[in-house]
Amino acid sequence: MKIENKQQYGAIDIMKFLCSLLIVSAHYVTENAEGRINKILEYSVSLYIIVVPFFFCCSGFLIFKKIFSDPESGGKRVLSYCKHLMIMYGVWSVIYLSFKIAEWMKSGASSNSIIKYLINSIFYSTYKTIWFLPALCVGTIIAYFLIKHIGLKKTLAVAGIFYLIGALGVSYRFIPEKSEILSDLLSKYDYVFVSTRNGVFNAFPFIVMGAFIAQRRDSHRGKIAEDLIPCIVSGAMFVAEAFLLKFKFSAPNANTLIMLLPFTYFFVSLCLDIKISSGKWLLWMRKMSTAVFLCQRIFLSAIPAVWPDGVIASVLNGNPYLGIVIILFMVVALSSLLVFISQKNRFFSVLC
Image (cartoon, rainbow, N blue to C red; front, side):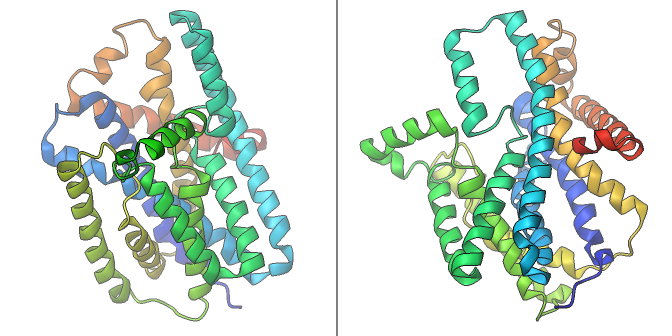
């Protein structure tokens, strides 16, 4: 099979970096400035719901592009990939756990809250946002196992069903909650697994989509015009779906929209259509997108939870426009430092 030159993935690196900044902005607005900023800006940053699917799909494309080119080494590639992800997750878990312990020492913690934290750490994530890493690992393993044993087409069908189940636990939760039995079942599920937005019901479907794109592009080279129009149309449709869920059904979360599936497919395909020459700046963006994604919580929630009252709060809860600029600056500055250190010392490469 012909393998595309890495320089053709430049648009992916650029978009991942921009998406990482978008999700930081969205988290800040949602948690600290909702209702205090211009509605247009507030709705604009809510487009962050495209970020995680995009990351999952791109990761699926990249890993399965390699696997399809050399199926015999597929198992070893997946094992090595997941090992890298879990080491990275372990390091960041230690970093955030230190903040969590400091928070408990400052504010106190009940035995129930500690037990709940331990359960969440085992079945979901040790801290907000970094759930992406174990989810990516779990999703990749499931995708590889099913594709190997039942083929890509059947795995796509299974992935679609899993995504719909996941949507019923998040954006479309109001449907099962109409049933007392299903509502009680969901509550029990959430206590242990926190959310259906995880490796099984969220990462797995988008990773399989990435695998499908990887296989399809061996026989079909997309053109920008072929993917741009359906990308715009499906994008408009997922926005309409989000508004419908919010204002008609009062859904509190729009992270698992149905129309995110076709949009993500065409969005990733469109980025692959755009050819950008390789360069060190693209590698920097690639690493920055990971670093920004993983370290953002240090400033958004970890430090504010342990810092003396009023110091960080004045930044987070003050002027929202200034606050978002300061948060982005601090996150990008720390991420740049981490990328620089990782390039100088291999020991720190697991950070990004």
